[in-house]
Image (spheres, rainbow, N blue to C red):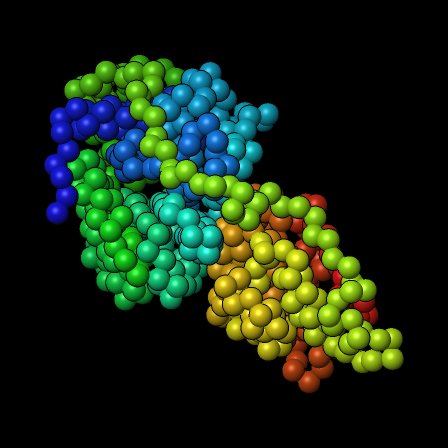
Length: 468
């Protein structure tokens, strides 16, 4: 059972939903680009999440126990900035710099705006990043929740389902996903349109607790989020049926309005129409401060600031294996070195795609099982999970055959945009593996990784290099 919202709270949340719509429209109109209709579809969801549920120290975004929020549908970024404007973090003048060349308010989220949790916008990746953050909370015994809004269009991406099955496998009951089922994609209807039951059946089959709601009903949104807090041993997804362009009758639920900002000369009339439809007047901000997360003894936590890892290789317990006269596969040298690193830094995580006995991450897994994440044969999601862990201060080493990183290049590229420091370790490089044939040979990997700005490529040709 959930409590019925009082009139004061409903009015506040409706006011926030109106403000979020108008501020998103203002920002996209000022920039003459952007996606206001998607923002309008999720405005009511954002209102309840940001102005009633999220526990967040607004003055300390790096607080390790803050709830996390990821907007996987990154093209709706203006509504994030609108939310923080209504919380008093940025001014209207700053909001209207959206998409300016020198503005931190980019067209899709990046951590240049410090309240963004991750770089998103290449669809299908937010849920995997959220899985990484939820795993981090479980590991560090923190009670924060990770919220992520995904789109019905992006749910056609296979990486979404890679993330879903892993979230269920690890029983991530601290993960709350919201699927914005607004029926319309960029060029037409999404794969299931408004058939919310098809989405629900899929996620139930993957092991999620599912709630289906009207995504424009404040009370229904509140009820679902309240119940989501109580779910145990499985992740949650709220399937919210929404209308693209919600609030403006002439464009609501109609095709061909994706990525089309309103013109400056239309703005005043649009604001008046929204005010009339809501029965409210637009205000500059909302009188609300997010609830604070539980206080922590930060000294008892692993420091989330990544520091240089110092290790004396001469004192390594495996040092005798690296005698110049010994023959040792470079991948085995890597596995031994990773195991040694685990002794000197508790923030190191190893992620595997079901090849731990080939990459020798099994050494680390056996010694530090709590810091080992088996991602199974789902390399795209493995990179997203590593990104989520790194965003929360961990030092992830993700390993697989070098050839198989190619299918995860978009996730790697986005991690580069987000300036996430990932350690990606590919084995079986080049033609040297011979009989296995070209499908197993990493031939493109160096070129691929060198295309990522500020990447560093180390080629383990000899034992000491692999060990480094």
